[in-house]
Length: 172
View (cartoon, rainbow, N blue to C red):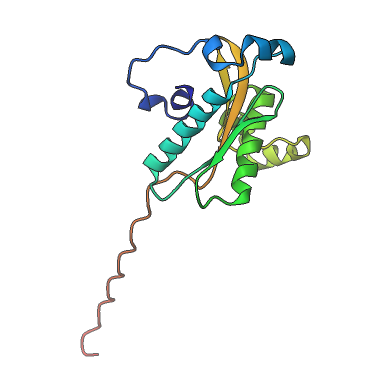
């Protein structure tokens, strides 16, 4: 339910009731043991499923790797489609952590500095300045973050048009 809002706001034209904090977080017993509110596995799976469905709809030959982390930065759920390379997991995980640490979408963080030089100057700070990470916020509480990695979502390439033959000079 939340992923569609995070991934494709225009895709949610249906009327759905907003999720409550109780529906998307750990049980009261688990919260007492952990001393925090964390996205539950069921919700994390739904978010991952929605991201992968969106990716496949945008590019049927594509796919995605999705990592959902809790507020502690630990992985709550991870999923990948067939054909994903190991780097896609690393990318998704780093995007989720960056959204968690900075408490905003990674695109906003990357856009903050505006140039590759300014972003590279922050590289020693361990900032992964790549879009695709989003905080998961319910009832004004951040309960985790999600990162999506994989091939870029773009329309399939058009086949190359044959080059027009060069005109021949008369008499040759």
